[in-house]
Amino acid sequence: MARSTGDSEQVRYCARFNYLCLKFTLITYSTVFWLLGGFVLAVGIYAEVERQKYKTLESAFLAPAILLILLGIIMFLVSFVGVLASLRDNLCLLQAFMYILGICLLIELIGGVMALMFRNQTIDFVNENIRKGIVNYYDDLDFKNIMDFVQKEFKCCGGEDFKDWSENQYHDCSAPGPLACGVPYSCCVTNKTAVINTMCGYKTMNEERLSVQHVIYVRGCTSAVLIWFLDNYAIMAGILLGILLPQFLGVLLSLLYITRVEDIIAEHKLNETLLDGGRRKADIEFTSAGCCMCYPE
Image (cartoon, rainbow, N blue to C red; front, top):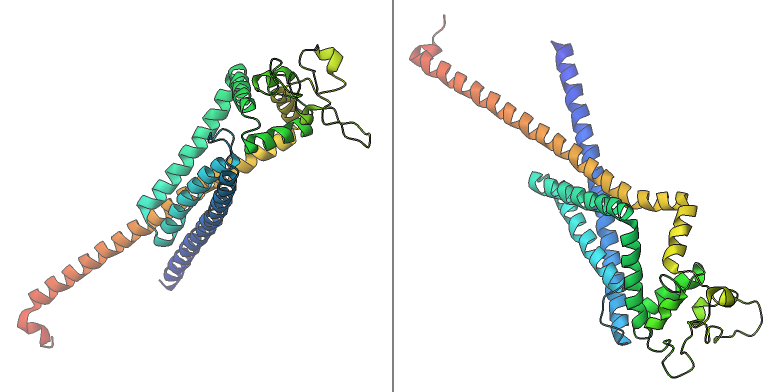
């Protein structure tokens, strides 16, 4: 009897230890992403305030500030639900947290698969939006900084190719001024001379690719970035894991914790039922004994 009681206590202790480990792990997970979401949101708001000071384009196309604000809001709210649910052991909130993470993960996976299946359409969509950004290149500082960085780092020019810059009113060949029929300096092949020629892309758009390839980058940035990712598949895999793995762990932790909480609730209800049954039995025996229950046998 003593041994069975000891075994029961050991099982109960292990179950409680398992519950506490899951609880603190989920609290830590949710709190980290809650704080991270708040930080991303704060950075996005600060960037948007700075963007408005320079009166840049109102469009949200490729605006890092807008993207950071949206990402921060989603991370902050979803993680807050996770923190509150794990602290209160609220099954409804825990299930909501798990389902939201699962839906986000599923949407990302489906989006990735669709982008691969319709690769040509995806590339055309990206090129079309880059051309829209090129139209307002000098008005949208966010897009200008991103485009300049990509063109320098990936040694490319434009979306599909360097002639995409004809979409800009200052670089169009029919436009007046020194920028007409040229490309930005970030498209130029880096020279090692002491004096930097910022007009190296002058009058290059009306030339053939082979005749200007030693002066400017002629390949498009969409192809250049895609080729870089394919060549550096380890980095690409790391980025994908960094995005998807935390969400998968969140779903898994939530599922395990929900199962454990449901087990505890079921065990608690069973104990209450047994206690209520014991009390009723004792009351019945007490009533049937009547006044004679005090007499010795």
